[in-house]
Length: 87
Image (cartoon, rainbow, N blue to C red; front, side, top):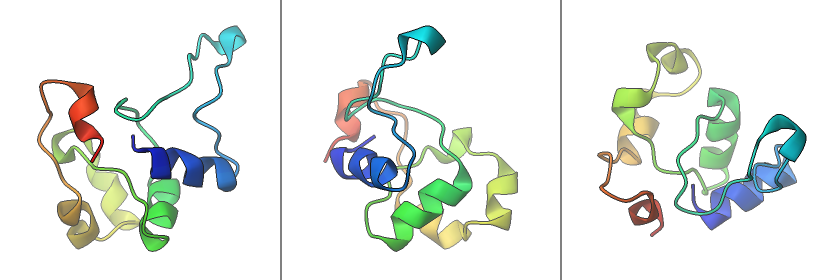
């Protein structure tokens, strides 16, 4: 997650930052790893704020909605520390 991606997700109604204790969801911060829908990731990409992608953890079905070129552009290896994802 990046700060820009989290802000974008909140702006489209997908608030990933606010903790929801009743779901045991702590809320995400920049550097966290999380699975998001292909649709929401693609919206962020089109708006220039897509988060990095770990291709090895991405389901092939995503390719029905997101071009492989977009994913490769933002692909990262899994870093030693989640904080390494923040630019």
